[in-house]
Each structure stands twice: as C-alpha cells, then as structure tokens.
Amino acid sequence: MEQDDDREIEIKYAHRFGQIAVRLGFVSREQVKEALTEQISFNSVNRLRPRKLIGEILFENGWITLKQIEKVLEEISEEKKNPL
Image (tube, rainbow, N blue to C red; front, top):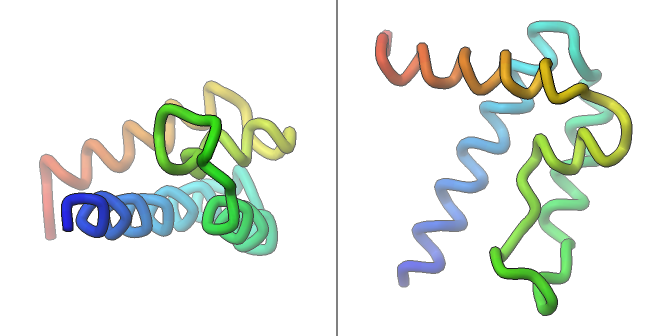
C-alpha cells in the first residue's frame, strides 16, 4: 500500500518535472518520454530506492545540467508555495 502511494507521487512529480524542464527549454518532450520509459522499466534490485529520479536519468544521458535541475526544482517548490 505505502509502495503504491510512493509510486503515485513519483509519477506525479516526474511528469511535473518533465513539463517544467520542457517549458524552460532544457529538454525536449521526446527526451522526457524516453527518461520516463527508462524510469518505469528500471530494475531496482541493487538500489536503495525503488526508481531513479527523472532528473537523474536526464542528467545521466547528458540532456540536462545540475544547474538546470536546480531551476526546475525551484519552480516546483514555488508552485507548491503558490498553488493556483
């Protein structure tokens, strides 16, 4: 049950992270789709957490910088502080 809740949160924020990264021009929609596919299919047997973060996948593929990840996370944080 708790794992299902965690997965829902991961999916929600992975999609939001991707939307913001695309809007800011950091990555393409195709890159986000590929990263989401990789995230879903990632085998977590040898990892401490269940899935890779979307930003981690984008970074490992050389599609986004750490500075850009920080900017996206700032945007997410601002949205949480000031919901519509």
